[in-house]
Image (cartoon, rainbow, N blue to C red; front, side, top):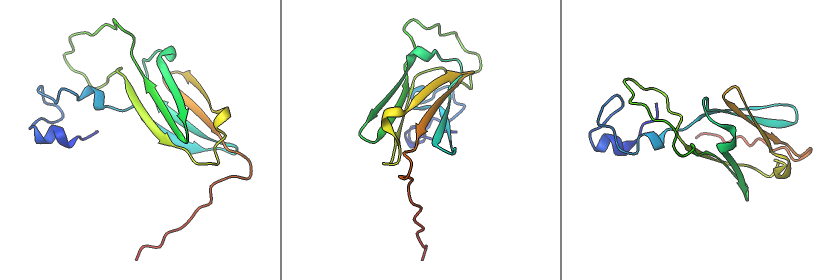
Length: 132
């Protein structure tokens, strides 16, 4: 559950009929990332979306993934709702080991899979930080 302090400050909470007016826009698509042999694979869980309405942009070392629902999308009178097909935006910072020119994406079975290829020999070095 995504918790927003401004909702609590106004006395609204999850499950309330009087939610904060921006509650739906605060929801995010869940993302899992794993490392394969030659890339990082990002899985954005966004079922029920239309692939042409996803937008992926790279500016510097920031990858922005967003979705804008089409105009005129039917909005039923929900009796109970736990899932939204609304818009979202996620921003990720990439490091210099990612081949920015060859990032690829595909949308299959409700999952947007983004492939972030690693430049051979430029893998990020793990730095351990001691806790004192």
